[in-house]
Amino acid sequence: MITNREEVIDRAFEVFLKMNYEKASINTLAKACGLTKTGIVYYFPHKLDLFMAVADKYVLRMHEPGNKFPAPADTLAEFIGQYVAGVNASMKRIVGLVGDSLNPNDCCPNFYYFHFLSQVRMYYPGIRQKIERIFCQDHELWEKVIRKAKESGEIKSDTDVKKTATMFRQMFFGLSYEQAFLNGLNVDKLEENFRYIYSLLKA
Image 1 (cartoon, rainbow, N blue to C red):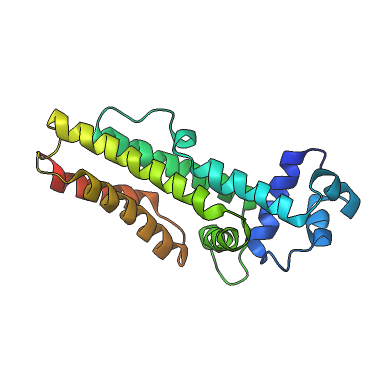
Image 2 (cartoon, rainbow, N blue to C red):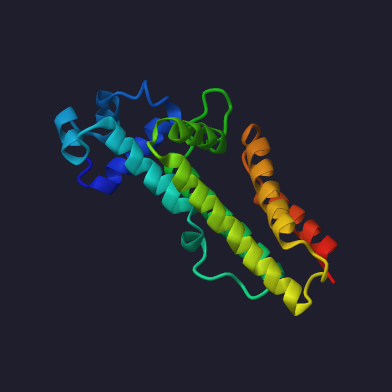
């Protein structure tokens, strides 16, 4: 039996990965948590409250740049490794939580996570502004590291900082989405592609 709020959030995350928000009833959520309906309502009076708490933990806080690495590395080359490690740690956390329980149609956990993100975008009030803030923070972090690499002579002096930051981010998001339909993001392939982009920028 679950006895604390965080465990309820973790178990509910598994349910929302498998089911659309509309279909995940309070009774279904309570059963997954080993609680009665009254027990789950004690922590979260409404289903939307629980859904938002799950999204806060597994989308907003998880993707907050500061939660992946407290401070960016000194060089772009080092930051690439740091960024990939942060992505890998987040993936392992999700996969470790859901395990192999999701797999009715040979789908990987990454695919279900993208499905969950679409649900968050649809049902979480005001989420666009919060997601946009995280995207901006991530982009600004890449820009900061790339600008420093340009100023130090690590990469070419004519590098367009904003476009290069976009290139790295779109490589990550594009590969993540594409491979979610297969076996999930291959972080080694992600790093390989990042390193190739870096090789084109080197002074």
